[in-house]
Length: 240
Length: 308
Image: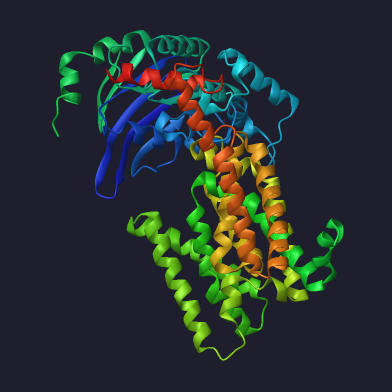
């Protein structure tokens, strides 16, 4: 049993003839925020999907808190914050409705919320500062508030490992700071977070560790090490 | 004639009572289901299933089994076939849907044409609500109640599926199982509605109520009440119109739903056309937008800054 929150070994994912990931290795530790860097098409989304078990790898192994991805999902340990463009913002759900969905894995087949569940939802909303906006339709929030609503869903879920796909895209600078502070707080409490981003400048303030991905892992370590020019040249230098 | 007498007159006839029962049951179940179909983007799939059941109905007739059995087999078969074509070929979903359902529909038409029988293609295509038998009524009520119950009980899961499959997957709820459940209920519902409204217009009942309710509310819980109630009301109004104007009942029901949609489209408080025009006028005049519109405005104000 490893102590890692996420342990990925030799992960290979192909879509028909396209190789999305080619033997990627990655370790994410509890109580740390790991930034996942890479160009579009570098395999970031495929990596997150493989960790979630949405795509099944052609080779390699994924462990979440020492369990298979399947077992981790069954225990609702994995929380996911989708990219903005993957969400239908006109969907007729309130902020509270969305956060309540975090409890669904723990409920009976009809997903009726008990009072303990409502409390968990309330405290998650309060934690992210959205109590006053809980009755709003989710599309009627600002970019930063939207992200916080989805983080609240992870909190209601009591997820131990958070996967965030480009959480800073479309979020203004002051909301980015709020979001970063919130993530730092959660990580300080022992949660592990893997955050994909292409905002290199913000990385040192955000992340404890960084991983540079281009189908496989080109560099991993502290943000300073990973952001060295020679590494970035490998990832962004345009071999394609 | 008093209003009461006018309202009561159609229901003196047993065929109108039967028509009312079948049409309202079909409309309510379709209305409820339409909420998820509209939100997921499966409207066309409803149309496809409705057309694809035709050969099933003919074969059931030939085999002497209830037509619901044949329809259900072909409805589910069509859905499975569409999924298979899409996944193995990489063709887009609308293409896969188009190929499968037109082929099955054509097969149905051919079967009708070569079958020496009393199958009236017109009844299947446009419904035959005024001539339903006791067996038909029993089928419609039982299957309708079954579909309705499943939808109500699993409404939260279905909404989760429609909104965020990835999260469903993440908390151990299988999106595949939910999709299969919804498609199964869709096939069931089409069978129910076939009798009332016919193959061609079923799709209207599977889209319009949900679309109308979507314009009226921003809460799923309310949408799930508004859509079936509206659909049931339109079924009633459509039957009155059909009786007094001596016009097609299925056509009138769908027309009523379309009219309500048009009214809501124009006058809906948040998403209606007039509201949007007024909102634009106010913004152009430097006026104050409502509280609800403020974040949207903030978002547009943000756009150029991010783009810069």
